[in-house]
Image 1 (tube, rainbow, N blue to C red):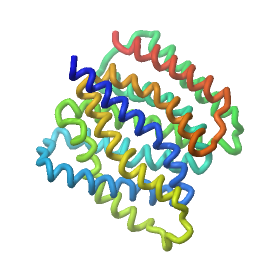
Image 2: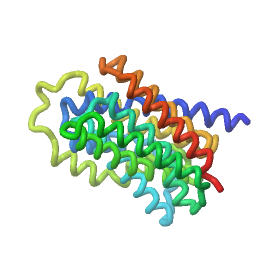
Image 3: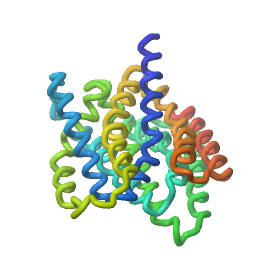
Image 4: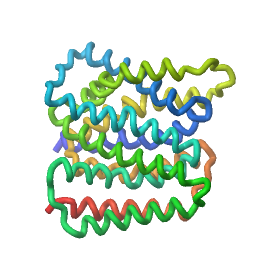
Length: 288
């Protein structure tokens, strides 16, 4: 009972940390190129993670765990940060958070595929309806301005779902913080090289808010959040604790409205709530 309770507590802390990721990324891309932002945040987090691995003498993953770790790195270290950074050059943080309502469903879909489970037909009804709802809302904002941002966000959700599912599986064997630390370590050579290639010629004129956004996504979104999140999944169970992601859109919208002054329309809230209900229904029927 105590372990399960700790899992929910750690999972909630992780969700709260992740909820500020898109608003912080929105601040950071105002001063940094998306590719540089993606590579430097992963590089900073990787150095911290490696120090943790060495200091705590974490055992090395075996050769069978390397491929799943690479998928985690592709999903949450490289893919999601880069794609969301590109998206936030076209859309607001509040608008992008509507897509985050699909992240639990994306994670569940990859978990079903990886575990070879057979969902009930009702699962696909909720899944398709929720996806169509989000796609329809995205296109309602206008094709000329929304297509690039919408496309980047959809791709980010898909690849992040893969990274979450693989990381959740690995956390049962390696431990929560070890999974993200090893994934960061695997991605470090590429990320450090890309950070060097995309290094700005000058840092003059970059606002403090952009530096704050970079610091947040590097330390909290890229590392600390995953320490709590994967630990929570390992302690409380992937299926149960994973449902805490459903609260992330609400926290994210609140943060975007409070700290960025972005408008949160009634339509955004309605779509987010409906998508959350669809995800709850889909997860309920995820197992045969």
